[in-house]
Figure 1 (spheres, one colour):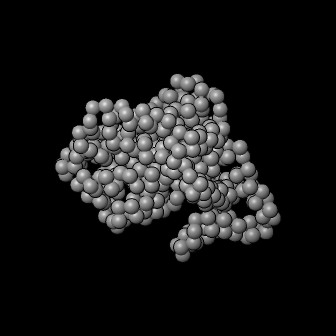
Figure 2: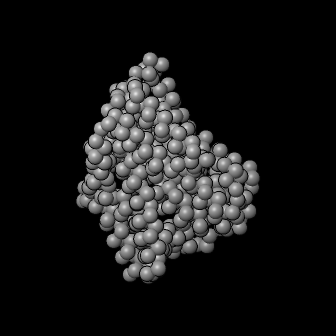
Figure 3: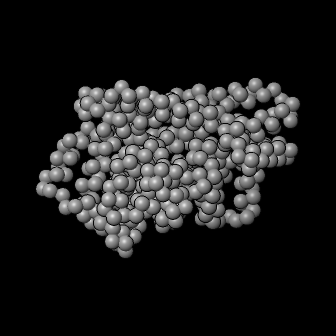
Length: 426
């Protein structure tokens, strides 16, 4: 029992004194090896193997693709189409923000990237139409999280690599949950907007939507090309990520003619920074997870949960509450890599499909994007709308509650997650 005490003691101590998550993970794992007098070269080799894999190559490519789409004018066209589709209905601009997040999330795979791309265009538009700044930011931050559920999804790639599960199957399983989360946000937005008197954009002119779709056809085709290629078996998710980069370059340079050298450099800079951050977290989290497995900590947790209750629905409630809680303090990728080796064996032993668990896990992480104190989307929304995190947090509560209800439905009714993979024969 000495190793788990050292591991968790050092980990929580470093977090409490404000150390970055990557330092807390790496230093606590290293402390266990040094305390045991082991050669920690094997620890480094284990961690290196986690990032030295073909599927993980999809990560920087999807990040680069999402960054390029902002410079290439693709995200702006998608947002414009979403705005015209909503029209003048109650909460119409909020509906547009959610719809635009779905469109952009089906390309970028990143929650913060989706929030930034949609928020820069939609938050000022919503404020101009009389929406409060805090509500506009809260809605955009909440809907921005859809980018990690609707495929392609960077967190799903990380879960697939960590759990050794099919990324294509995870992408398929995430489609309906993503639509359900978006639907829940739309219902909440309509209810609140009806009460507050928030409206949509002015009545559109005849043919305006058709014109916007014609001008944005290449933007609309992006998710069709990427996801269609994956599900048809034409290319793997990793190859699809590379295809999406070249597709974006082609559209931005030759079709829209908006992708300039400065935008390309900025996209490369943001991709390098974000990819490096993700890979170093993967590196240290894998070492941390290896020690958990070696000391049978997942087995202990499983035994503790089964001693507590044999009811799978009750265990799901405990697991969801736990995931949402830690999602408030840990970033998504670290949460997935720490939690997967601990909870996945527990849930599999109870008869839960690993793909089903992965989707619920990612959905819980999606909620973490819009819950303080860590919520990355909240900080992006706050900076765009120029309001405090506290104001946004209060306005985001209805959206968080709706998302929790959707996650519980997904957990209790696995067919909602698994029917598409089963339909495609995975």
